[in-house]
Length: 432
Picture (spheres, rainbow, N blue to C red):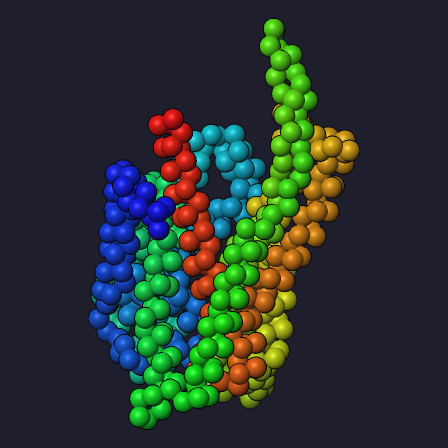
């Protein structure tokens, strides 16, 4: 409480927090501006019964369930960012621009990402609407005319670009990442509705909780606390690699002679592997839905077999877990390059005690990274299949823990707390 009072008394920090709060309120207003031409009650029923659309709805902050101008949320911008990260590895010129271009190079990469977001938003909006039409039929979407398509796609592109701009504005205040905070606000905004629905489902006809329902609710809360504690522990966990810098003489001055460490986080990939895995895993089932009504008997039978396979919760959970583990290793390899880290340490005159600079250090980093990534990958896999584990034990779908949502919320809260604390320490240092 004293820390909160101290933050509130710091005028510029208080103003930053209030401005960010107002900007997040603006994103929630945008998420409730609907586009005409859809039956919202039927759409929400479809979203509750489809896991892929449910995931999209989470990242859009409920914008998809409202069929709003921000129905895609910041998803296209995140996709564009991931594509640009991959392109910087594939295309040498982009990689050099990011590494050696400095602030101007990073600004150029950001500009390319923004430009890529526009066509990605239009394509994803068109595909999502077509998918909703084919999955939900005429009960969800009416037939759009050419002009309605143009207006709808234009509104969705504009809504996504406004969200992207708001995210960048929030980031400039240096209290958390703007895109992450927008997703965080969307998840938190849906909590009251989720709690209300859970309470209604648990109550009896007289409006009171039965003994079994009360035990279920208490058990659910206990599991939630344990899961949140585990997420905090894994998110903060890291392996510190000792690094020493040799003393160097320049002129009449002596430099170096510092002992520090290189932190290797257990969860380097964040929530990205879960997003990749669920998109890949649900794609075959969605394609099979398109061919389930085929006039060719063999195609229809194959589509039905694929649907039956992916509807089996056991098979689905096992494949989901394995894909998350695989994508965790894949994404970690993209964001952390031991060869590059080893080269940078060597250029700065540093070394890991007991190891030769260069190749031997890189091999050691590879070995350590693979071991700690295994723990992070298994953790992310368990978080991803957490709802299925709870359902198998409780034999009920009344209450389920959305592991992905909890992971995002906890990670964002930790990041914001660290940045606020860093700004408070900086102010204390300046006053001193």
